[in-house]
Amino acid sequence: MSMSAISRRYAKALLTLGEEQKNMEQYSDELSQLTSIFSEQETLRQLVESPTCGLKNKTAILSDLTDKLEFSEGMKKFVGLLLEKDRMSCLDQIAAVYRRLVDEKSGIVRARISTAIDLESAQAEAIKSGLERQTGKQVELKVGRDPALIGGIKAQIGGKVFDGSVKTQLKRIEDTLKKG
Image 1: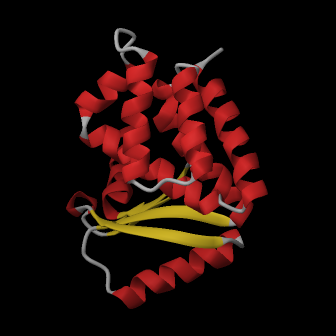
Image 2: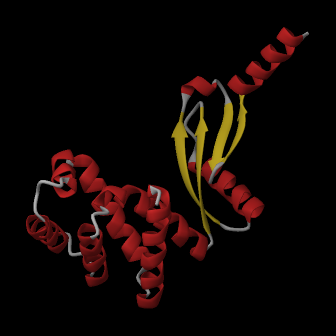
């Protein structure tokens, strides 16, 4: 079975549990915390994923970690299950799939926009409102700056990219001129 199929299966199981316990957002936050710690502490990740470190030691390490982070009992059991089934290497993908599933259930879409200059908050809010009207969903907007765009805006919503940047328009003109 592929890693993405495994990740989807575990994410869906956690979503079902989260819905039953009304902890979907909390589980998402806890998964995010855990993946963040593992990305910052590569040694910890390697230790937990290592086949040479015994399950008992890994369980003790993760138990201490989840206790210090004050994770919910449901998440502690989920992490324990991942460890027991040797699926800790799938944690990043599980967290990403889980976040997507929670967003779908909640009617949220995540968007990222890039502009050549910094936007004022009113401009960002206007863009967010426009995206909400277009999608019919609540938009969680991240705004970034990319001077290479020269001007205009580039938006990414889910897997779609809408590129209205000057750089792209110039590239299209160049391609048209080359073709004759």
